Amino acid sequence: MSNQASARVSASSCPEWTWLSDSNSSATSQSIEWSRYSDVENRIIEEAFRARLPMATLDDVYIDFENNIQISNNDINDQKPIQRQVRRRTDTHLREERFTMNPISAKNPFSGLQGWTSDFIVHAKKELKLKKDKLPSNDSRIIQMLVDRATQGIIEEGKLAGKTCEAEWMANQLMQEKNNGLKRIWKCCARLYTMESFLYKKINETMRLIGSKEHENVWR
Image (cartoon, rainbow, N blue to C red):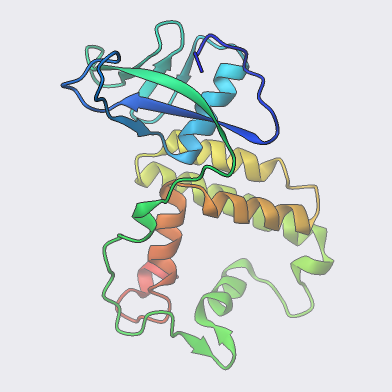
């Protein structure tokens, strides 16, 4: 679908943005290689496109809708053609990075337990000063506090990963659910975690180290 076509798509369809990654090919070549943006980048681009903005800003590039190109934030001469296609939601792609991440050598991965409770939960409760009778399930103020802390953490980790734009978009998604109840918040957290982005990589890296004394400064 042309980028100039209507931004309207059916509920069963999913717009996908790609960029020409093969520098030796042109957009009209018979054998070209298009690369997909991350899930979060795709949403940022699509939202700007539907809002009819002239451009969308990502962490490494910005998207020029008028000329259908991405331009490097560091080199204006580094430009690549882009395209928008509308696919069925059932046409999903295997996210290979989820299966090829570098292994982390922890002495006791996933093993930190105090009784039946994970070390991470124990230390999180201490850090957040949560008492036994003060649980998110029965206190909306705690839910809102957890959302605030989570969004702050997402933005901080995003800056460290060089993914500030992605982090701000994800934090905003979570903040929109802050006052909508625990179920909506959990669903939002699950959706953000399953999206292709820096976030799931950082969470996986950290959770695999829980219980490791050697990496205690990371997971605590």
